[in-house]
Length: 431
Ligand SMILES: *[C@@H]1O[C@H](CO)[C@@H](O)[C@H](O)[C@H]1NC(C)=O
Ligand SMILES: *[C@@H]1O[C@H](CO)[C@@H](O)[C@H](O)[C@H]1NC(C)=O
Ligand SMILES: *[C@@H]1O[C@H](CO)[C@@H](O)[C@H](O)[C@H]1NC(C)=O
Ligand SMILES: *[C@@H]1O[C@H](CO)[C@@H](O)[C@H](O)[C@H]1NC(C)=O
Ligand SMILES: *[C@@H]1O[C@H](CO)[C@@H](O)[C@H](O)[C@H]1NC(C)=O
Image (cartoon, rainbow, N blue to C red; front, side, top):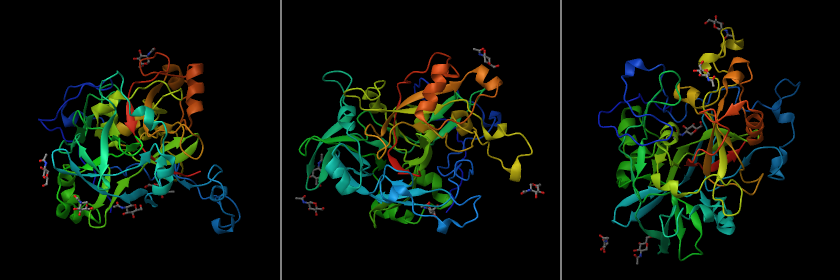
């Protein structure tokens, strides 16, 4: 089922959040240069990102080629399912079906959650979760005795009890592009907002103090209500559904104990990858990506990359790459996708996801963390005016461009950590 595109709604009561990235004033809808497309499956039908059939431009059919080397060894070239507690549904817009858990909060209310990563390698293998040892460090706080990025809980009767942090799903997600350029936007409203206790990270104090990535994806909603959406969300019920459930959920089924989430396409070391969006420590990425704004994630220390005790992995987000509207007329096959499309401006203009660049993912490196430390990068005027701007697909490409001075922070200063963390568990590697 194709989801209807959600219109940008400027609710009078919409909350504003302090954001290092976004302004605060509201504008009328008629002023918008273009429309943000909040459909999580938007932007996928792009032949410049899709992996071409390996037999393309050869004399043989695909079936005549041997199997991918990754079938033998995961670190070699070829597709690899990384998150294995569910399955990817392939199609133009791949999505991921995984186990759905019911929880009882400290206040005795129901909530619905998923699990994607663990700091325990053995449990990770056993349950098909991503192994992320850095979560042990991410779980700590910035000050001694201060708020920790993980909520500490115990397992009782095979489930976690007493979770305090909860998420409000009622806000309507919206974004208003900036005047002179879409980024930075003038206004953002995430579609779900965690309270001050909410964090996707839970640390189990009576089971080895391991840390689990366990985002909440629906609040106190009745099982019978959710069971109406086992096969997807009818267009006429989308607004209502989104006010109760995480924006990335495409179908949810307590009866079968599964949920299907949209996947997002990005790149890691020039490999095309799929990941999930769960939460963000800043309202802008949380809004753009359809995640939950989780202020408590700001307790995760950023900036230390792979150093001792670092909990994060770097994530490169472009702000001013090409958008589809930059494609000159006369493209082959009436193509409408700019082949170098990338970045937040393009995403805000409705082209689809920003095609972010992830650092390490499991199977090619040991330093994966689902908590991605934003490094925002912008092409300089020189790069834009002289045709140097392009699509980057690997961390070291970005770092090389930054070292040479072709990309900088959005304010023109040398590339640095933006102090923002997004919780985006990896799902699949295409190559
Ligand atoms: C998941 O993706 C598959 C393949 O694109 C599609 O057929 C299916 O409808 C999607 N599921 C939902 C719930 O959107
Ligand atoms: C939660 O519910 C249980 C059983 O219904 C009850 O025994 C307990 O006192 C309740 N706790 C709170 C905090 O309301
Ligand atoms: C343990 O959980 C099961 C459901 O999984 C429930 O039926 C049972 O009553 C629980 N036991 C106690 C002592 O709460
Ligand atoms: C491109 O669009 C034009 C005008 O709609 C149409 O006549 C032409 O057949 C299209 N070409 C291709 C290759 O689709
Ligand atoms: C870059 O170009 C923009 C738009 O033309 C201009 O506003 C800005 O001042 C330029 N920046 C620098 C550092 O020259």
